[in-house]
Image (cartoon, rainbow over all chains, first blue to last red; front, side, top):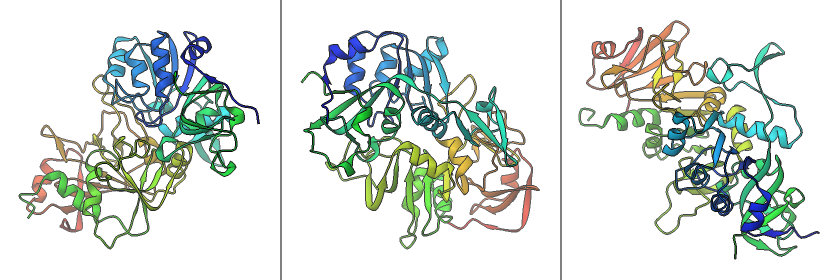
Length: 219
Length: 220
């Protein structure tokens, strides 16, 4: 198996330009690629589009990107724990699209798995259905939601191997595994990188073939 | 006993009575998180946490926290023997797909049809829906656990001006004053809290209530 390049902060900044779209893993900061987020803040990235479950707190996970005003457009299911997100949304600096959590993860999955959309009952008849198509199938109404992908998927894992295989721990999987399928370029922020052969195929949650770079900070 | 009892504790105690052994239960934030401590020892339920855990246990002892094992509020939890962890697609497959038996959710308002609004107050507070819309869509049974009034105003409205979380009618509403069941005829008042009169409930409820012929005191 080919080894995946382990990149440094400067490599991250060379890869990700201003205005890029990013899928960012994590659930209230748990399982968030914090070291990559910090690299983007250090590089002063602007006008990013971010797709993520929530914006955590201002000093946690993807919340830091919001606080540092790196983000122009946000797709998320929950922003209630980050006062910065609320402030920037109300002032018009940040464009926010709220998506039900189950729909958000399926829209990302649809993109990564090569599917044309999501048909769900979630949101039918509510504000989130405005402007969307309702499709009748076998006598039942379903709401059509479109696939959602990005230039980059930034994911976190406790354990990787040098081939890029990822193994998530407990509730730190959340959106990471799904997002890894939906980014054109996938960068995994790994707490530990084992040599090739150090991980059993059975332990692999995200196969290394879809991971482009590993990152551990500048260690 | 009820006169001195905290209103939220009373609600949590009553909701706990609704939970049966062998079911998968998801608890929302706020009052619902108080429920587990009042579940009788002989009732064995599995707790679902939408960040990807079935079989969630209590907070770990100090020093035993794992940053990668938390509840949906990012607080450290434990995984009980037999627990399972998975990604958000599986988690919401369980929720939307009808595999969660009961969800207990907090509420801003419920309307006369029994529909819940709990995700935003336009112009004031826009936290987002998180998993609430999916839970209301897919859970077999939805119990709303909320205070009856807010700043003296009824939270059970004839018509709610807030954006609905779902058009699905909830199964049961439990407040510190009453237990109310939405039916096709309207909201049925089934139980009154100890020491609370039916008149007092009517006075504090904007929506029309139908008094059940079998109305009784709340079991807590």
